[in-house]
Length: 82
Image (tube, rainbow, N blue to C red; front, side, top):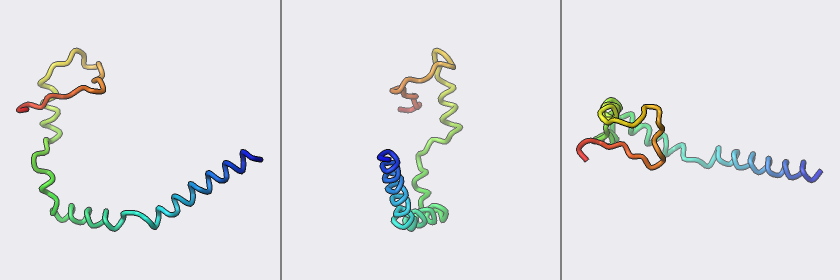
């Protein structure tokens, strides 16, 4: 009986937390920023970003020991010009 009671208490807390999050969220702020992005007001954020094609091209220029060898956790992919 104690296990069922404990499970119910945890479940009730999770439900109440999720229910409260429905009304206490950042939807209005997210919507405002999304509208700004769609209107082109945040295009300055894109300046200086390396495109996917350029990034992949840089990867191909560098030789690795094995194509199947995974990169380590601290591996850094060199970017030309830096």
